[in-house]
Image (tube, rainbow, N blue to C red; front, side, top):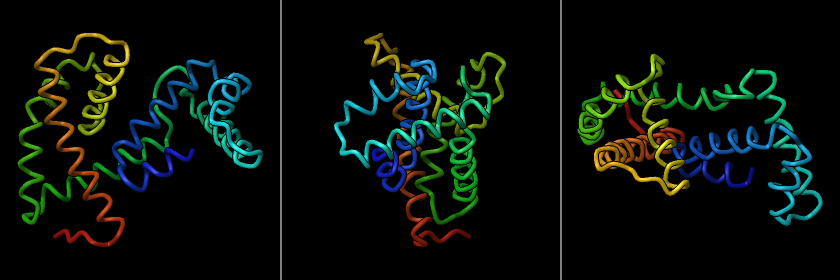
Length: 181
């Protein structure tokens, strides 16, 4: 909860990846609140009120996952909304002549995105969601200490640069500092 708040303010892309990890951690514990408290809340060693708030945060996420039918796979609507917001901003940045560095980063990442789509196992995902799935998937492979190909690392580099720019522009937009045409 505290990490998510901080990430949401500082880097929306990292926030989204973190929230996907939280969803997966909840799933790995069978959406069992007792296990979540024991393995995720108690180790944080918070005072009584803060522990209660964190427990409540996880409890709310579990309930939303059940209601939205994402107990086995998929993402919560609150996380899908972030993709939608970022997609809107992404399209506005691409249309604007004021952000050539963003467009250049996009066109550098585009061949990798096209390749991701062709390997998408028949799933039609929004462009940005494909990019986030790449980063999340590679992160999971790294955690499992699996080998990652040079081509995948190149894709991760290009996509990471683009999403870092998008996150910076998102932060500026939220602060009212971004001028779009």
